[in-house]
Length: 468
Image 1 (tube, rainbow, N blue to C red):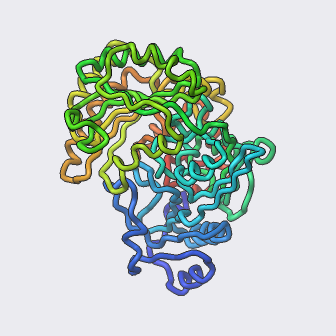
Image 2: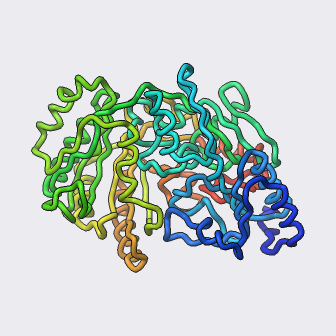
Image 3: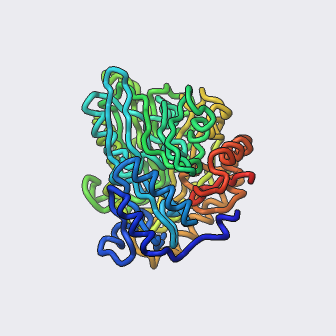
C-alpha cells in the first residue's frame, strides 16, 4: 500500500496543536504525565508507545481523529476496552483513537433495546440493562470492551440461549476511513452491517451499537468443579450433555488452578481441577430439577451453582483477571471432542504452568446454529465450541514457561479442530490465519473492505486487506 510506505513518524507540532484545539476530549503525548497510564493495555505482555492518544469525547472527535490520521499518513489504532490479546488497540508511533470517554447508554425498556457508545465495557451495559430486568449476550469478564467483543462475534454465558452478541446487534453508527459518519443495519448500508458482524474493526470506528435485549435478570449459575483425576470422565459427560441440553442451559468447560483465596475452601487452594461455569436462564423454580442429571454425574469438589443476578455472574472472574497480567493466547474452533482429543486435553491440563493459566471451551450450539455462515461475517456456525488456551501470569519472568505450554497444548489439539479460530482469541498470527478464520466469507469481506477502506487505514487489527 502506498499509504503504508509513507507513514510519518514525526509530525509538525503546529499541526498537532491545531488537531488538539479541534478536540473536545484530550490529546495525550509522550511527554505528558498521563501518557504511561493512558497507553497501558490489558495484556501487559504487549508494550506499545503511540505518538499520540486521542481520548475522544464524542463522534465529532472521532471524525477529527480519523481525518487527522489519514491526512498525516499516521498509523491508526482504535481502542475500546483495551482487552485485545495481541494489543491491537494500540500501535507504535501512530495515533490511538481511545473511545473510553464515550460511555453513554440509553435503554428503551419498551422496545427492549439499548444504544451503547463505543467506550463502554460490558459491566457498564449490565449495570444499565439489569435495572430493567434485561440483558444481551456478551462475554465472561465485565471489564471487556463492548466494541472489540461485539465486532469479533461475541461468545459468552448466554450464547446457547440468545445467540452470539452479533446476532443481537440491530444497528451501528460508524466513522469511515474518509471521515463520513454512517449508520448500518438490515435496512441501511446492508453490506457494511453484514461485515461488522464478525469482521472486526476493519471497516471504521463504531461509535455506537444498538442491541436487542432479553428478559434475563436472575440466572441459576456458577462454577462446579471436579478433581483433575475425573477430567476425562467430566469432559465426556459435558460433551454429551451440552450438545443436547435445552437452549436455556449454558455452560463452558475449563481447566484451572483453584485460586488461594475466598470464597474457595482452603483445602482446594492451588489444586488443579476441571469444571463448568453453568448459566441456566429458564424458570428458577425448574432449576433444581434441570440440574439433577448434572449433580448426579459425580460428586463435585465444589458446587457454587445457585440463583445469581446476571451482572454478578458477568463480573465473577474480574478479580482473578485484572488488567496488567501477562497473556499469551491460542485458539481453535472445535466441532467434536474425540477420545484422542480428550486425552491430549487431560495431558496438558496436568501441566497448567501457573495459577492463572487455563483452557476454556465455550459452546456455540443452540441459538448460534440457527444462523447461517453466510448471514454474517462470522464463519464457523457449524462448530460446537470456541476453544481458547491461555498462558497467564503476573510475572513476565514466567512468560517463556506460559507461552511454551500454550503453544505445545495448541499444537497437540489443533489436528482435532474444525480449522480457523475466533478472532477475539487470536494473537497477531499472520494473514493466512486471518483468512482461515473467515474461510468462505473472506472474499466478500475483501470486497467490502475495498469499498469502505481502500487504503487500509484501519489495519491494526486482524486485518482484511483491500484488493487495491
